[in-house]
Amino acid sequence: MSAMSDNESTKGNNFKKNRVGDVTPPPTYDEIEVEMTNGSVPTANGTAGSSTSDEKKKEPPPQVGYFQLYRYADKWDYLLLVLGTIAATVHGVAMPVMFIFFGELTTTFVDYGKYKTCNFNYTSCIADGTIPNSTTEAQFLQAISPILNFNDSIATYSIYFSIIAVVVWLFGWWQITFWMIQAVRQIRRIRILFFKSILRQDISYFDLNSAGELNTRLADDIQKIQDGISDKVSMGIMNVTRAIG
Image (cartoon, rainbow, N blue to C red; front, side, top):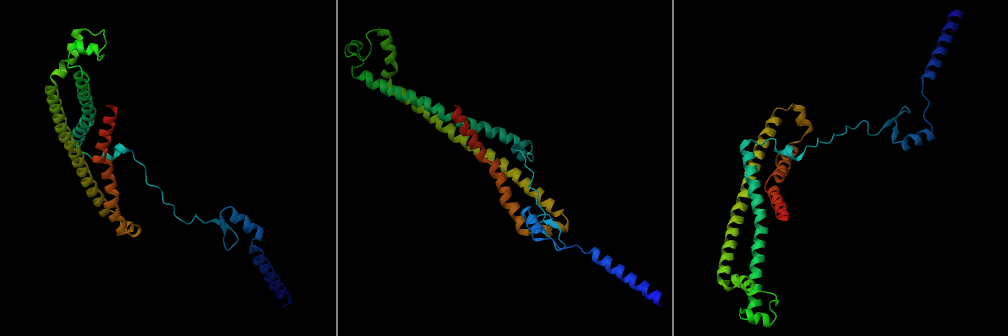
């Protein structure tokens, strides 16, 4: 009996020693301060874990190039893009051309007032210094030839300005119309494909994405795409062409 009791007491002591040996001592204050300084939070058993490791980091959406926005366009959309670009180019060039004619018209007015003081007479213009003494009579007549037909010149420039006005109105309308039509066609195609993609998702997808978020994507996000491929692009092309011209 005494031997058995000694063995049991020895086993009990060994068990207590193992239990005591398995317990991890709590971290000291200095260890906790160092762990929190490194961006980690100490856990209950004294080990440190990152505060952001348990949170799922949302990956940013993949970036796409600008021209990839047109990957849903078909051949008719590309035709409208070409026609709209040509119309925007002509619309932009019309402004510099108008300035050229306006400059010539202004020169006609200035010359008319200049030579009118000497009554369009070669001798009088030489006498009062309107023209240099080295100017020949042939050069003088050539210079005042458009001025003598002043009314005809004004009528001609009026016709030019009228033609430019019609060209600007017509090509400006084509420019906006063609770019808007192709943008609406592509956006309609994108909405349909996006809606079909939503219908093919698993039920877990709707647990992670609310109905309001899906409506926002269908309305606001796709509207941003439309703003980037519609008439604003044609306005940019028109302004660049106008600046170069």
